[in-house]
Image 1 (cartoon, helix red, strand yellow):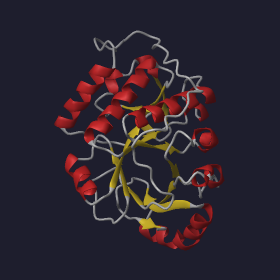
Image 2 (cartoon, helix red, strand yellow):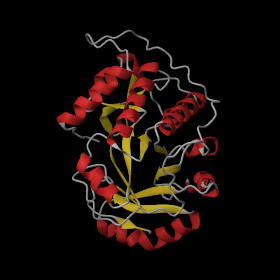
Image 3 (cartoon, rainbow, N blue to C red):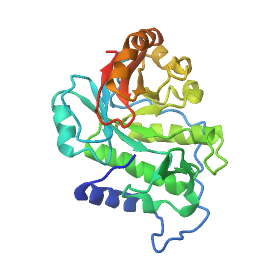
Length: 290
């Protein structure tokens, strides 16, 4: 989804990315194919460190677009890494609210300030419904370097954690031959690097690998596990005392309200921390099962 970055944040990100990446930016045709990241799918989880670990019954709000409404009395806000103003992060944290910062780890969005750091060989097919966003080759060392720089930015901006999106390339038509082992290696690397920076990290969707990843991630952030009957795949998280933050979408507040009673009963049964939200995640409405 489209977003814009203030000039100061753009300069900070550019400095971080130039330090982290050795990509040749001259011209439109960097070396192809990109170097292989050679990540280890069997790497052990980083478990020691002082980062935020949300409780299984945590309350939360998710807003990616528009001016962030900071009025909700919840424990966690999930906001856009690039777009959220510093003042919003500080305001929330001054009230004891933790701030999780969203970015896409598995796709290149052509409106982000670091998009030109991806080699053409790293860019795959467009995501369905998002013509300005293309799958990334998560086996590429350049892609890994950009994502590590985004983690640096999250730590520098004072985020308490991160929500890396689109980490299920192995299960989509991306234009690359990415296996489930490739995805495990990438996702585990992201989690370990987040923890090394003192950041909590969410596993976004990826129910098929939840069992293999629960020791690496601090919570699950899912989209519509009730709608698609996938919440059962995620039960390993509450079994480990970790929350499932789940969003179900609705076209209007009225439709969300009509669904609340039955959905929230199911959410309690499935141990999900479920919100009914608009597709644009712009705070047009928020119906919670808190």
